[in-house]
Image 1 (cartoon, rainbow, N blue to C red):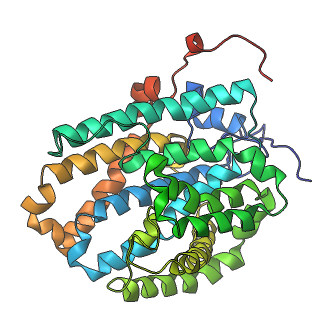
Image 2 (cartoon, rainbow, N blue to C red):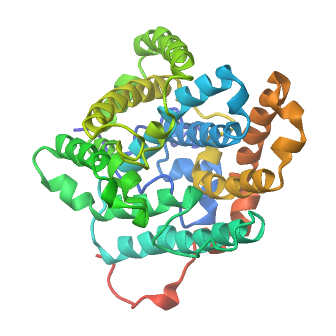
Length: 379
């Protein structure tokens, strides 16, 4: 057994001496106390810099991927990098979410946090994104529906469902094989429809279940120097493979929001792609974790605000798209423009993860809402 988390009392600001925590909530759900934004308070809470670094780097890749969508059509290189990044950036995020959901149960205090940290932001941002599409997107028929997530809000819906089912995945004997079977069956079931974005919920489920059953030593193994060196040829080979696959592969497979039949393939291709993509995503995610810094970096504290960056950057991307900026400014489709778009996206999501932004939007992302719940014992 691993010893409980502890900090270096002589150097409370040093993250690199804090062992992996045994218990902690999902990284996407912000912490309740504002003082956790400071390095000293974070260390006091047993935060591990590795996970905050991983969350920040993953959310930067998410924002970059969204910024590439309007400009990738004319560049095979961008399309290849897009496929490469989309293979592992959300799986990495979901594995971390599962890891920090390991001890979730149906205690009243945890259910309250689930509601205030996921349900309330989902309702607010699903409504806001739907209104944005109706007003600026030229689609007045866009419904405001809480059962049909649009754009980025699917992840909140998925995380809510995954966490509610956590006790089941801790109970069954073969959780990961069972989750893979469910994901494979989902790819053969076009009748699932778009309610609650269940295709994505089910097809990404194996990564969450895997995270639930990972232990601290698994992450320590991926952080070993020899695996970091081994990951270099794997990553280079994956980039070359993605470049080759760019004109041949449908990127919709990586979104995991449609069945094989909806993508124009026989049903049996769905299970094959489920197994293939899971293996590829897992391999690249391990390589990604191998290169995540273990010590405290300048961006470490931003890892606590990744949900803010995730939900807010989508407004900028969609406004730029609705306003036709990517069509008006054709230079954005040149190599220089594509690089500029990449850096702008990284800078934008970085700014949206900072403490000032989190203070402004905390009332939506972390509402207290004590008035809505009965007083009672925590457990």
